[in-house]
Length: 331
Image 1 (cartoon, helix red, strand yellow):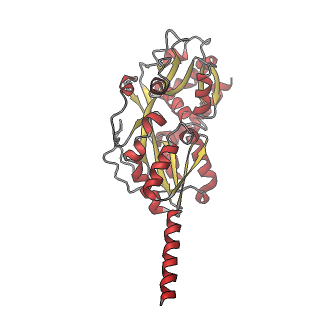
Image 2: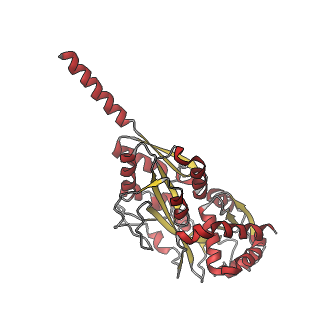
């Protein structure tokens, strides 16, 4: 009997250890998991709560994440994908790789209504052209002024084929210029220093002084004001409005860790995750915080109009609109 009790005790101990060692694999974009991104702090917070291991898998950018999922299919090693946005969710759903989240999103705070049953939002911001105030005395006050401005003042953009900001800017151009977007791209081309695969490369070139402007977010100046105590960089306010990005996460159907994945999606909506978004990912939080936003967020550019295509329109037209961009930018 004692031997039986000992065996049972050993089994229970082993089972507890196995559960504690459970690993949640999350595909996300590279800047999210850097030392200065929110990934490390979120990992520490979630692991303290779940008794598991949170394993970030950094991939270049959001579009690149979706491209990788399409290649890997049901054999993808991810339990969760974090870093797609509203411009990609219809295309992501079409892969049939994702499961319903079952998370209460009714208390999330977003500039748009949210009723999606697969993707859970975790942050948002409007895209903006960030400029160096020491080099640009008169920043563009509209997309038209950017397109038709001084070609001696350069901007760094991101590739819409691999980058969610790059895709966002393409949609911004399309939403303002419509059928004449190709002509607008051709006029803008002399101002473009280079097109990078992702946001990190573009912003790095900008802060190194390689260009006077870069495509980023209305929230980007908050980083410089809070972390660097600097007013050197500012966002240009555009008369036509600004294109919105809402970043999302979802669970894969093939996950062997469904309960843990659902727990993480619910965790995303609370302070353990959201507290690290404003001053680590430098975006607006979509969920509850344990303390108010820093005052610097109240000084950011407030778009006069929010521009946003539906996910279905983006999925239907993305290939053609990227083709238009390629043709115009390569002439």
